[in-house]
Amino acid sequence: MSETGGALSGTDSGLAAEAAKLDADDVLRAKRAEFVLDDTVYLDGNSLGALPANVPGRLAEVMTHEWGTLRIRSWDESGWWTAPERIGDRIAPLVGAAPGQIVVGDSTSVNVFKALVAAVRMARDPDEGRDEIVVDATTFPTDGYIAESAARLTGCRLIPVTPGDVPGVLGDRTAAVLLNHADYRTGRLHDLPGLTARIHAAGALAVWDLCHTAGALPVGLDAHGVDLAVGCTYKYLNGGPGSPAYLYVREELQSRFDSPLPGWNSHAQPFGMRPEFEAADGALRGRVGTPDILSMLALEAALDVWEGVSVDTVRAKSLALTDFFLRCVEAYVPEGRVEPVTPRAHAERGSQVALRCEGAGDVMKRLIEQGVVGDYRAPDVLRFGFTPLYVSFADAERAARVLARTLA
Ligand SMILES: Cc1ncc(COP(=O)(O)O)c(C=O)c1O
Image (cartoon, rainbow, N blue to C red):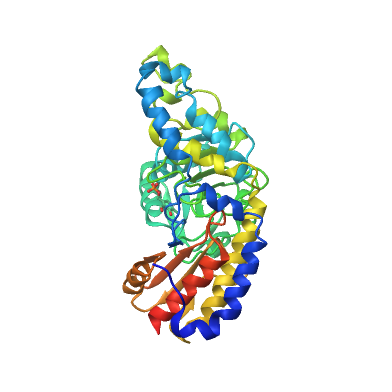
């Protein structure tokens, strides 16, 4: 699996030396040891984050002691019942939210449904005339499918537009707007503060999907007045395959949040077993049914790696890594073989680099065989995700070098 550069060693020496210097100066470099990694260059943390080293031990303890020995007592004694809001409060500082506004549970898809239908209900509460949902036309497919279904269920018209065109379609009929903070395919970062302000000026509610930004860059949910947000925890938050997602409901909206999926876990008295529904206070309203405790507690342990880490530091390294990778690609890859589709401007870049490349699926397969793991999205995009907690500048240089050799 080791990669020595071959034919390109003459041209790469300057960049390899620069990578070594950047790694030596990296204030996050010690974090890498907190993950289970090998000599693979792992650039797929924008799809599935690497395993934090403390998680297996914590899960073993949950299995043997909390489940195996305490059994049902653990709902109280081990804090299982309150895990969704407790872990929500652990995620909160990473997305710029004060405590009490995030619950963890269900998938992102399910949370998109809860957030969007609840947003339409709230927007219509004072203003019956609002009957339009605006959705990012370039969205990850699940958000689009759910927005279409939410529109049908609420009797709204669905308006798909690119995020840049959102301001032009807003009006007094807009109820809610569902947007992605970063485009899953290109890595383009959208203007969350600016678009949220425009949506509010139109009297509508803003729902943001943070799957590709939480844990990679500052989001500022409270600072920018975001109404509702959802995100997954298996990418930059390293929660593990299928780990539960989260739902943010801004504090001022919580008393009006009318979930389309009211379950016994969001009841004011869940053990009252009453036939009529009475919503709990606060973000708890976002809960539905019994939480998936094993995945949830794996996520909780995974969040320990954020101890002492500031998201601003992560962002600075992410931009430095993606800048450096783009430079290496430019220097090594034969002209015309790839075209970066990720914006150069820092204000428009998430934490991945997407390269348009003919035969991307086959190229990625060959990269993986050589120990460089990214992924591709049909029809022709190679994606390389940069997780600053464990990706090094040497990884970036090696990935570009192997790509160049593969395309040569
Ligand atoms: C932007 C975005 N939204 C939603 C999803 C779907 O999330 P889930 O499968 O957890 O429902 C993904 C998955 O990668 C995603 O990237």
